[in-house]
Image (cartoon, rainbow, N blue to C red; front, side, top):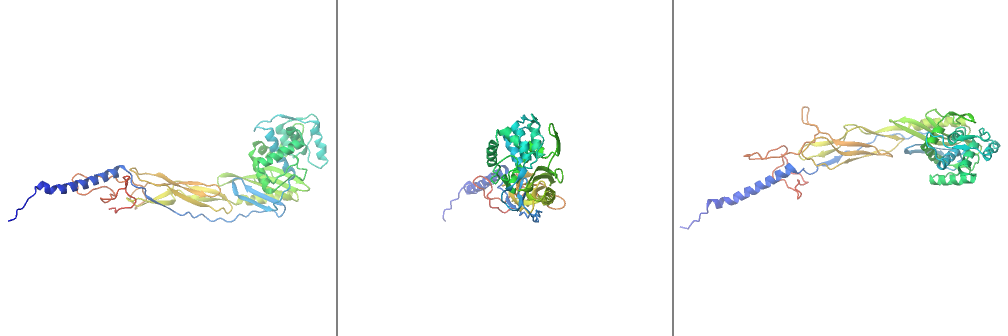
Length: 445
């Protein structure tokens, strides 16, 4: 009878015990990782934005000369009509004179500035310009006016003798003014504008309609010039009552800027008007050159302004609660990323608007609740933002709604044969080297 060697009972059970302990250690390690370390980022997907269609702008231009118009801050609105060559600009030249003199003799808003003492050379300008049929204003002997008052007479009444006098006062000679004006034009990128003297009586003072739109922006950016060109009337000591030569002032939102009249130029107007559109103030700046007379030109300017103002419209980027993307978390249904507020964009004409939704990587930790997860950015000349976030809601009567739930906290109940916990992954889910669940999803109960 063969000898049977019986191993001790403990020797038989040891491998089983070691195997069970190893499994339990793996389970415990997983539970600790699940309780401490957040799960991997949820998978995100974005929705496609479909902008509303907009009709092309219907701008009403005159059939003569040259015209350009633009809504400040809306570069896509720059629209032109007629020729694009440089034309005589007549007394619009005085806007350049004002800005060049102010660079040499700065004047703070609300200040009258230093006195301008009118010399015999300046007094002689009255007869010189009157002989050319130019607009002039009284200039008594030994008159002294503040710089601000002199600007009023030059820009409102369009008095050529005051424009010439300010040029002499600031630069000492007409040649000195001419050089300063050329430098100023070059510094401000007005490459199609030429100024040879301060009044505009010389037809060689020329510019294009588009250059004048830029000049208008510079004029309105200067508080003193903007104030003076927007003043309808004033009383100036030694000169008397003066009225603004711009008869459109105060009509249809017009707030300036400068008229011009010359045989070689026709009737001209550099204009600006302000409107309320989409909850914001919009300023439209334009230049119309080569009109037959100011009455007909003023009517054409009003038609043009109305057509430009009517071409503004608001594009809705987001509505509050609108879904722009979703997150897919392994332990729950899809979570919507929704706009936290409404957002819109004011545009002009047929502006192509697109929107880009950006969702940030989202790793769900232990805490639930609303959080900012991205943004909707409108792609247009001036981008607008609409923040997006995942909204927390809950399971309740009426069915399932989107929710960002806490990451499940898993635990083993003493004596239990299976692990319990909400949305618990099956035992053996692969762990990444960093201790987080691997990107590939396992089966979930």
